[in-house]
Length: 140
Length: 176
Image (tube, rainbow over all chains, first blue to last red; front, top):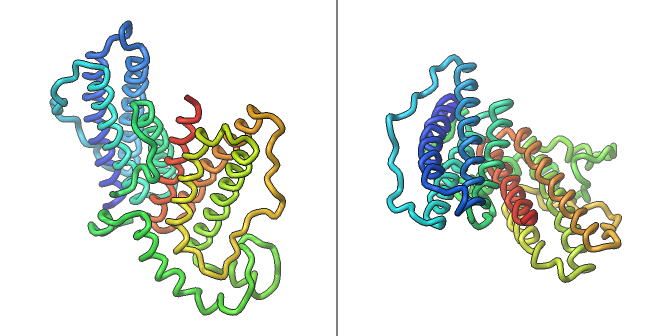
């Protein structure tokens, strides 16, 4: 995978994450689930920031950033805090793998960005009740 | 930089193994019969100079193992001094062990990765000891990021990046 292909894949994943996490935030309650709501809000902000930064990085390579889809599939259910948290965890797990690929396919400033993004996403996994892993972001 | 599709199926440890065959093979002859220090030694002996000429990613692997062993020693000394901290720090210890195991194949047998002979000094109170481990692990995480940036092999950079992320996760758990 070329650096631009990996950046585009990460951007596509961030487009999906922004959409799905936005839906999850809309279905959570700041009064009944304050911790979850705060975590989803933080996650939404970080995914939007990553999306925008990836667009800039891709543009610097002379490519056109991939556009978002009109809509993305959202998991069924999503009524309880546990279901919302689990759905958010799945989003972060996918993003972590995408950033792992980005590290592998890039060098220099792009790789540095990917390393910071991987660390942030790995920590969000834990915030969404994920179990710490030995190699978060590995291909397997 | 490109990667073949089969690389995506490899485990981290196997990723190192295949790369290592090439890297270690290239330097193996140089390393035989000598008692060697780390590649960052300033010694001017032929052996020390040979190690400094190791392929770049082997040197990165050696440095990573050295850092992991030092961090592991700090955790071990802390839990020995304060056994009640063991439940909170055991995740770090297990993570370091897994990471050293994944990297061990990349380190030539005769390269000394022993840590600073000065034993880790555990702070005199439990909160201070915990804070010291937190600082040690934060430093390790940062240094693994630096090593991932130096790595020439993409898959090896990814492996180091995942190690850094694993330490970040443990730090997040510790902060709970």
